[in-house]
Amino acid sequence: MTQTLLETRKNLVENETPRTISLGRRVLPMATTVGVSFGIVALQLAQGILLARLLGPQGRGEYAAAVLFPQLLLYAGLFGAVEVVCRYAANNRFNRKSLRRSAGRLSLMTGIATTLLVIMCIFLGMPLDKQYLLPLAMLCSLSIIGQHATLVLTAVDRGSGDFARYNRNRLIAATAFPILLALWAVFAQTTLLSTCVLLVIATLLSTVPCFIGIKDRPGDEEAPPALQLGKEGSPYGLSMLATDLFERLDLLLMLWLTSLVTQGFYNAMVPVAYPLTVIPNTLGMYLFNTGAREGGGLTVSRVRHILVFSFLLQIATTIGFLILVGPVVRFVYGVEFAPAVVFAMWLAPVAAIKGIVQGLESYIKGRGRPMATIGLRVFSAVAMLASIALLYPITNVLSIVQGSLVGQVVCVIGLSLIVYKDAKEVDRPMTTNANNNSQYHSTGESV
Image (cartoon, rainbow, N blue to C red; front, top):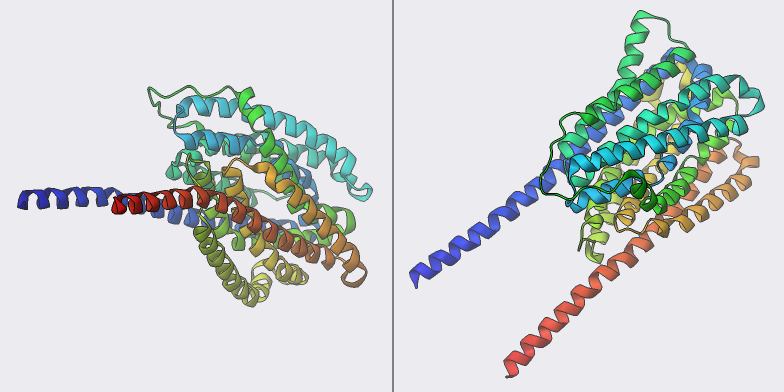
C-alpha cells in the first residue's frame, strides 16, 4: 500500500514538472518579445528624431511623401505570405530549412510584383505640386524587396516558436537604418537623396541574418513550393489589403490635402504614438499561434480576460502619454516641431485602440478566417471618411486624425464581436463533452 502511494506521488510530481516548465517557457519568450518590441519602438523613435533633426519639417514632409506608397503597399503586397508561412511553421510538421527556401522564393516574387505596383501608384497618385519627388519615391520603392524577404523569412521562426531567433532578426532589421543614418550624419551632410539611398541599403542588409544558422530537421515533410504558398495566402492578402488601406488612409489624405510642412509634422508624430500599440500587438503574435495550432482557440472566459486587461492597460498608458508628450516633443524634436504636439495628442487614442485591433485580428487570422474582417475594415473606412467630411469644415486638418479615431472605435467593437462568436464555437464542444461526462457518471451511479 505504501509503495503504491509513493509511486502515485512520484507520477504526480513527474506530471506537474512539465507543466511548470511549459508555463515558464511560454511566459519568458513573451516577456522577451515585449521587451524587444519596446526596443524596436525606441529605435524607431530615435530614427524619427534623427530624420526630423537632420531634414527639418519641410524635408521630413518630403521624405514622408517619398516613402508613402512603398509603406502603403508593403504589407498588402505580401499577399498573405507572412500568415500562410507562419501557419505552416506552427503546425511543426515541415522541415524548417525547406520551408525557409520556399518562403525566400515567395518573398522574391511578392517583392518584385509589389515594387512594380508601387511605381505605377507613384505615377498615378502623387499630387501635382509634389511630383518633383517622383525619382526619390521610385528609389524608395526598391526597399520593398529586402523588407519582404525579412518579413517572410522571420515568419518561419515566429510560427515555429523560435522567438529567440525571431526577436534577434527583428532587432537587427530595426537597427540597420538608424545606425546607417547616424554614421552618415557624422561623416557627411544628410540630404533627402542620401536618406533614401540609405533606406534601400539598410533593408537589403537586414535580410542577411535571416539566412544564417538554419538547421535541418531530418524526418520532417518537405514544405510546399512557393507558388502553392502564394495561392493559399490569397485570402490573407485580401484581408491585409483592406487592413492596410484603412490604417494608412490618414497618411494618404495628408499627402493629398496638406502642405509638406504639415505632412512633416504629422508623420514625425506617428512613431511617437506607436509605443501604445506594442503590448497588445505583441500579444497578437501569440494569439495567432494559439489559433493556428490544431485544437487551438480561446474560450469566452479567456477572451473576456484578454479584452479587460488590454483596455485597462491602454487607458492607463494613454493617460500617462498625454501628460508627458508635450514637454518631451518640444525638448527632443526642438521648438520648430511644437505645432506637431496637437497631432500627437490625437494620435495617442488612435494608436491605443489600433494595438487592440491588431491583436484581435491576428487571432482571427490564426484561426484561418482572414476574410471575416474585410467587410468590417471597409465599413470602418467608410465611417472614417464620413466623419472627416463632417468635421473638415470645423477642425480642418485635425479632422483626418479625428476620423481615424472614429474608424478605430468602429473596428475594435466589430472585431470584439467576431472574436466572441469564435470563442463560443470553441466553448460548444467543451460544454457538450462536459454534459456527456456528467450524464455518464450519473448513469454509472444509478447502476
